[in-house]
Length: 157
Image (cartoon, rainbow, N blue to C red; front, side):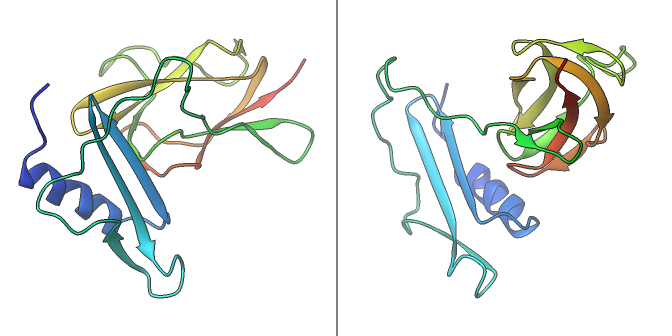
């Protein structure tokens, strides 16, 4: 994959400005970008961790150094909410007009794909990470979701 352009970085910063989250970590190949809000909740202004014309490149982690994924959040009623693992546009189906990956009443396993999040034209499959029955769909198809936002609710069996 080619390096990120200045326009790509500007697009990322625009996404940060339009959201309420405090932190963004993005890895594309060997390129890593980490953004945090200055004062995290005080000033409300997004600022890159390091001010540079191009993102800092860091070595990719070894396979044994797995990147942590957001764990499901326990919802009221004993169910779990499956959070968005990253910021991007959420798609509930593999392509426009296709049936959704899951709907209310479907049984899911930890490895069941529940949607796709698009970040800079890169499609990322999102799995349930829990087993149970889908009780609610929270995210709308084609809408920007934030890291940690509930996508679906699952009631364990």
